[in-house]
Every structure is written in C-alpha cells, then in structure tokens.
Image (cartoon, rainbow, N blue to C red):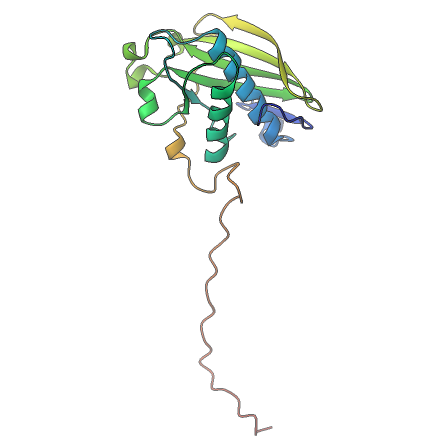
Length: 207
C-alpha cells in the first residue's frame, strides 16, 4: 500500500517555483503516499454533489507519475476509510465524472503540503472546455507529517474558488510508454546489427 510505507522524504516542489526545484531530491514513494492520503481525505470529507456514492476521477500531475503509479494511487484512494465510492484515474470516460485534481506538491524532509481541488458543480453542469476553470473548484491544502514514519494528515485548510489554479488535465491513456515512474525506465536504445564486412576473408594458409 502506498499510504503506509515510511521513507526518507526528500525535497520536492511541483509545479517548480525556482530553478533548484527542477532537480529535486525526489522520493517517489513519498510523493505517491502524500498525494493518495490528501486525495482520500478530501474526497471522503468533501464528496461531490449529485447522487450518493457518485464515482469520481482523479487528475494527478504527469511529471510525477507513470501509468502504474497513477492506477495504484486511484486504488489506494478508493480503499481509504470513508471514501466509499469508485475512484478512477482520469481518462476520456472520466471527463464526465467529478474530477479531483492534485494541484500542488511540496515536500520538505518529513513535512508535506498537497493542494487538492474539489469540483463545486455537478458533473453535468460542466463541459470539457470548463473543466479547468479555476472558479469551478474549491481548494484544499492538506498538510502531512511522515518521512521516517508512516505519513498522516495533520491539518486541512480550505480556500474559496480561484485561489489555487487548476492544473492541466493528465489523461492516463495519453502518458507515453517509458515516462517517469514507469517500471524499467525508458526503453533502451535500439541495437543496430553490424553490417557484414565486404573484405574477403583472410586465407589462414597465407602469412
């Protein structure tokens, strides 16, 4: 489970705000754990409008996860206590669902702040062009502690719509193979076989 494993959390910021943030001391496990816990808390405490048990989609930043981790986060959020609904990584079908966005990640050696956006309208009230409208989402900053012990939520701060910008949509099916966090990393360069030599073979009897 990504939500229960401790790790040595490094230094990470997304979106980057300073050149030093572009080469962080990245802890992949801490990023996945904190995003999962923050999403789980906000979805459980601030469910979408509409019918009870409405399924939701999650939108996780493309620079931070590949497909397997994206799916794992969705599974772990769905399994969180009090979530009680289907949770799916964002894809074309998920655009018709209420979407919870991870809008910011800040990890500082055992402390983390994760910005989550919650839709404030029913899914049917938004068309695709409006999905990234800042005024359509309430913002929440979820503070966590952890690192060398299991991550846990310590505080949730709520913001009015428009304070936290809405991130770009990261559809899981559009993540290219070999992207960040994919098992095995990028594919190896294609090995081109050597061309056979056109020089005649040397006669072993000569010399």
